[in-house]
View 1 (cartoon, rainbow over the protein chains, first blue to last red):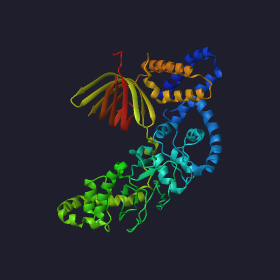
View 2 (cartoon, each protein chain N blue to C red):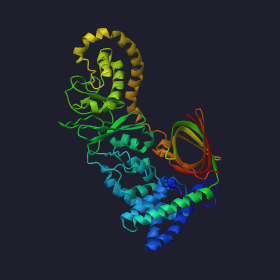
View 3 (cartoon, helix red, strand yellow):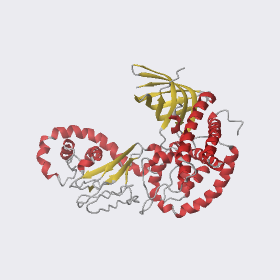
View 4 (cartoon, rainbow over the protein chains, first blue to last red):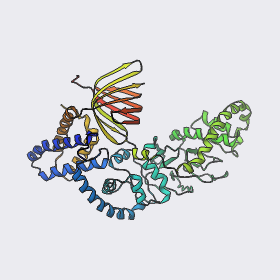
Length: 402
Length: 104
């Protein structure tokens, strides 16, 4: 291994840096009266973390072999331990990704219990040390099937495109996550989370309980009693104040339209799509909703009593917009149904390996030049972390257009 | 004074985390940890300047650029990093660079 390291200078470079630092620091340690043992511990910790991050290929081969051998044994023990606790844990990818992921604080449980997140970093260490990907480790944990979308959600962090936080009346902060396949989930801290297949709204008076909904099956028909809460459908979030949508399972949030305008914008878009399916009747209320965002959105056909007069006036608008909505609605309609299937598909394995590393390059520059909107970069001495892997360069030249 | 720029790399972060663990177990003092980090800054700067000898080209589109406190931060989209041997494509990359006081 050592002889074939020509292609990748990174591990050698890192090794040498570690050695240099440790050696230079040894004096400092001794001056402080700190034992050499502590220095060795620092070195070990440092190297372990580098290995865990999987950002660097290769390592001290001897140490790696020894560690892997030890890790295998411990991993087997750890697996037994984790299987016991699997109901409360969801395994997250190795630490490097964990650190970036923790900033968004998703808290997911695989069962209706108090949630627990990334536990036991040791388990993670062993899991990753054995070379198992996050998907494999989760599989070995035999996560319940209902968690699979979350599993994908978590392991395919690279697919996350948005993380929105919504603050409810309680002051709870709901994390609103939108996966790449369009499915939207609300992750609510310390609340019951994953629901298997049916929407089971559990509402409590005076509070917002937002059960996370993985899949929406048969939409509740009209005549749904007024309830409180938020229901999420794949690619849809519907908030209604006082009325219930016809085609969606909708819960109401007590008097909070003003606080969730983000959702409402999306809801409006969604409702536009729904209207295309529902026909022209819900059109006017949609426009009312559009024109007055804080107002409760109403798409229910039965509740259109107040908008009949305006129907006549706005027919022209309806026709034009319905044409557009039909196109969008058709597509959205298909997409609504497809998430049930698309969630079965696992996106490319590469994506799962990508995690959600924000690819960062830290370096110095020789020259940065701009001409109108054409930028030229002359960089030097940089360390890059791309797609979870580390690269280095002494010079880099780049072009970009703004 | 060497740049503290490289502390936010895999290498630097793992070092900081390890130092934090030792501090928590009170095996070292925070002061000592700081010294270690300063030493790391020097070492990594030297190593990068002397030990690395490879070139990379990249091409992409610029999303945002910022120059604040003498530090450039760029966010590029759909970038291709091309080295002699391999090619890495990323959707989004952030480039952070402090102004180099020693221009070549």
